[in-house]
Amino acid sequence: MNIIPTALEGVLILEPRVFGDARGFFFESFNQQVFDQAVGKPHHFVQDNHSRSARGVLRGLHFQKPPHAQGKLVRVTQGSVFDVAADIRPGSATFSQWVGVELSAENHRQLWIPPGFAHGFLVTSNSADFLYKTTDYYAPQAEGCVRWDDPALAIEWPLAGYAPIVSVKDATGLPLAAL
Image 1 (cartoon, rainbow, N blue to C red):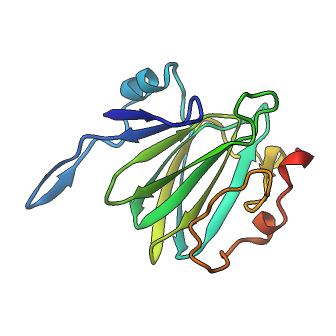
Image 2: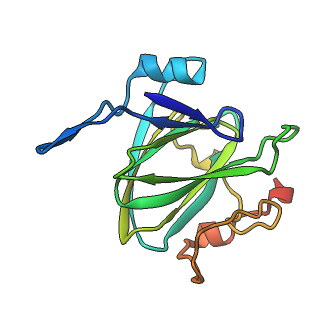
């Protein structure tokens, strides 16, 4: 597995070794020992989630507050997305900074988003199947949402001149300054 650091400490791109031939491909999508070594400490995943979204759907920027903060290991199994992790940790040297990565069924990349970061993605293909593992269970009382278009974050979503399709919850997310 190839581990690629991003501009945000702790946020990592994981590229598995893919073995392919005329029949198709094979790769190990998750190995606890390899993952723990890559991120530098053990993490225990408790929940797997799967969503399917159409082109132009933007989900996020979601997070859970302590004591239910979640780390997420995310990947795409069909289609492609522009995936974003934003640092919302007060006092962090990279507070309000973000990284964006293309995740697709073709590149097999995964993104590790540690607790303390908000997460979102924009579907850039006709549709996308998005899978993620979390380090804590969904806790509605702890969930939070930062507005996807908050000027304090200035995320450069690849919207190509169209308005994204967002849920009511995401459209009414809080500005970063209100957290």
